Length: 216
Length: 182
Image (cartoon, rainbow over all chains, first blue to last red; front, top):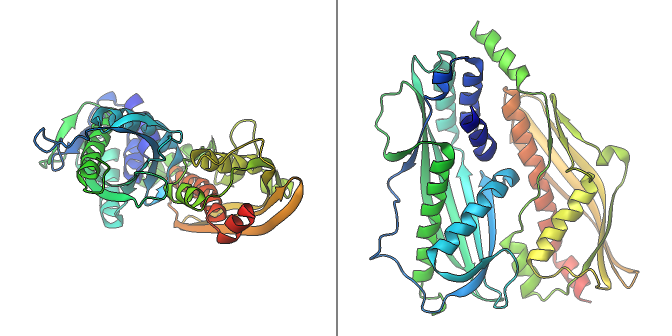
């Protein structure tokens, strides 16, 4: 149940709250265990031969915002920001990663937008009710969380931003749903989301550093 | 049976109180403040125009309240502080002081749709002399849900986002920028 609460608190997708609701109705602990999380394989890791590293990394100020349908989600932002900061350090593209202004005025702005696609949501809601009320033993639901990650890097005050976008998906499967998921399974929602954030930022930062306008 | 369980869950998940959460700064306003060379400013007092404006907002059985120890006007001040700090434009010793009165704070829903609005009179003073005053207003609408937990969460997020929208509207307003630079 702890995984449920954490996931709901952090990602706030309507569908998963519905599934949580269904689980709360049940007293069967094994029903909660039926939830599985997958990170889409399509994006993957940045391969060593793709990786671009600046010769002289510079410090950067980070502005990170988690959004749902383009609106700021303050609670999710608070949870994911420390992960994002660590991931940015891990790219090796910057000498310092901070939330304070830097001497060179460089900023990287990341908008991690969780898109809600109404048709998908409506379909999943119907499945979720059926699956939830059957404690996950009859029927199931596969929900997809779509993420559009917009990254802007401003090398110095007054400079034009370098922009890139990365798409990624998180799959959540509950109950008996016989469908092949094009993703890699992780034990917990936290683990899956951490991987999703890391992969999206690694790809986005690599795109930025590879841009000819990135300072060499 | 199914309807009964659903109704039970709807009401079981609706009774809660949640504080609004601090919002991150935005690249857009940080760039405006830096690129236009807006001088650093101090933050003065932010007050509520009336008790009704400053108090908590109820959505079904859920209550949206200001963060601990603050009212909604002070939360607006904190949102300005985040944005100015990120831009390197916050200086408590500056003679230029930004203040505000929260004039409107509303969020409601009727099962199918929701709406919220936020308004404030923003002032600038230099050395104690008023140099700028203007009313700002932002609003939002959304599709609400039958399920209470979802409806409350949606309203929470939509209302919370109004603070960022209002602050960004003020700090990127050419009239505000011009007044700050004079």
